Length: 242
Image (cartoon, rainbow, N blue to C red; front, side):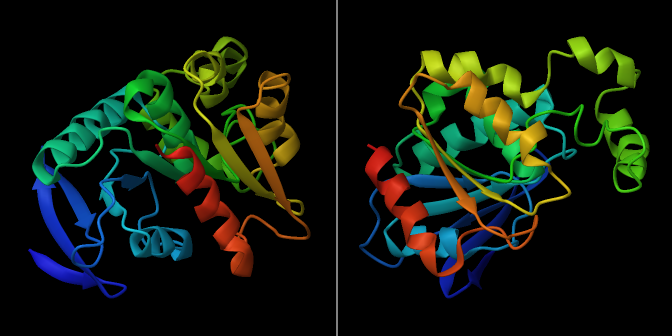
């Protein structure tokens, strides 16, 4: 079904029994590139709109849950390959991951590095020990109980010490495949705490030239992005999406 999304032609359909969306750049402007919003489809879309203006296609497929299970990563891979074949696009997409969407983006890139050109992460959840596994957090407790426990049945908090599905565990694979990453975070974020999440990537990528970090001074978890400076994000993607 065709529709409009922020002034761009949008097609909504079902892919493997899941809601799927693809948004098209304006006629004759396509650059053959694909951006994949990994979660929170309509949230803070300025960067995606700017990418559409640069000729990108934009896509989304609904996740089964917010915690980047292998099942959700696998269907993203099949979806990206389907879009590349259907619309003559580069198979190497740009995952756009905000918050838990960052967990999806990183895990997807780790499982399928051949399908990723670069990553844009904004306040990404990289450790489930921090979110939603932190004891004593009124925000985390219901998410742990009603969402995480369903995504990873039977996992207890003490087991998170050796849990292999933390997004940060994909760092070595991303480094080995030389996937460039732009990571933005708010210095006043009290939901996805940078020292417990993004800082882990700083440590993992130390000594490489693959990780670019832009702090947003005084910003809390929301709003995502850099506001008037979102052009910096778009330029990074353009520079690293070959």
